[in-house]
Length: 259
Ligand code: COA
Image 1: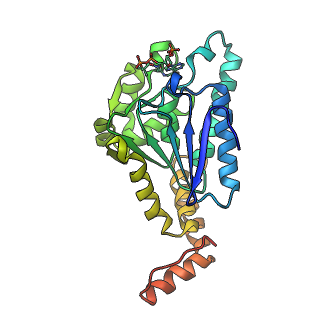
Image 2: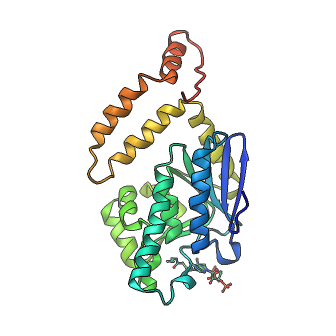
Image 3: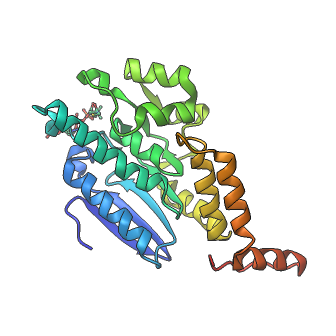
């Protein structure tokens, strides 16, 4: 599939989606958000894709936010449509049954910070910067940032970042629990591949259960403990569970198929 603002490649089951507007620091314009939606739908449907890495083109920026130029002159009604569309696509990422890692290679501001937070894991290069600077524009986060940042760093720091627009450097983001690892830029994709290799050696069916159950904690109107019971119980009917337990008993490495 050819996109205007995304580069995609599949290698050994891993789909890499690169947001490719480096002259605009990979800012998310409407077209890019729409293309992300298509790319995620394709990724879910494509059996060849086992895991996804989302990153930005160049060495300076992951995504420097929603495209500010496109926001100028918008009405309240249009604002709702913009935020809803962004939130829908980021929820697709968050609820993707296949593991999704953000490889944060620089600025992750506004919609970029929000995009990284919608991914299951975040690996940052040491030049990465995270923030929700929308207040500088007389705006607030609209793609889930007010809801997700709290989940990662707690209300105290989340409130501060949203109210001041300050940025966190990679080390601060690591210490606050916003990112999983910080590595030199040339180690960014290798670290993501290393993590994915470990995850992919486990049962894809069980990984899906983990994603659904952990996400359920944060969903309104859903009892996450019940979701966990369902997901736990469903594992008993899978080939992967039979394989995992047989391999343990037989003292050999499990060979999971995701069935
Ligand atoms: N939307 C649209 N364009 C953006 C953008 C955004 N969110 N972020 C950066 N750009 C564009 C700049 O306008 C500039 O384009 P130009 O060369 O055509 O003028 C280009 O990307 C490079 O950005 P620049 O500001 O010159 O780089 P910098 O290194 O001086 O500063 C940032 C980097 C990230 C600090 C700065 O670009 C910035 O503050 N961006 C906006 C961040 C933001 O508020 N995000 C939330 C949006 S809701």
